[in-house]
Image (cartoon, rainbow, N blue to C red; front, side, top):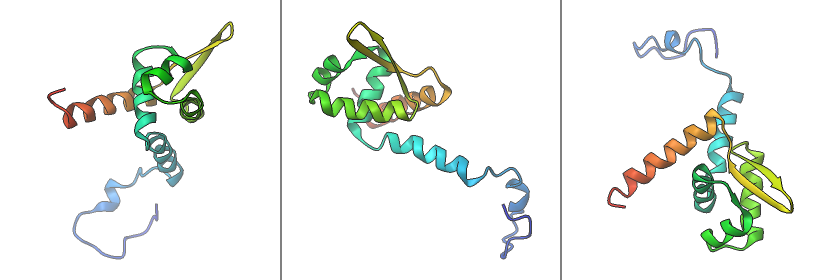
Length: 120
C-alpha cells in the first residue's frame, strides 16, 4: 500500500487500519479459489466429495452428466487444490482435500445452501 497519505481525508484514519494490507497477489489467489466455484455443477461435485470419496462413473451418475464432463470439473478442482485423488487398480477415487481452504469453502457452501433453502 502507498505509504503516504490518501488524497482525500474523510476522518476515518484509514491508513492505520490498512497498515497490514496484503499484497494484491494474495487477493488474486483468493479470487482464483472462488473462480473454481463459479459453476453450479462444480460446486455440487465439490460438495459431494466433501462428504464421500467417489469415482468418476458414480459421480457421473449422481450428477446426471457424462464422464468426460465430470472429469473436466474434477481436473479444475484438483488443479486448484480443492480435491485429491488416489488410484486403486484401474479405478481413481476423488475426495475433498484436507486443507483449510477446502474446509472453509465447504462450510461456506453449506451455509449458503442453508440460507438459500431453509426448508430443504
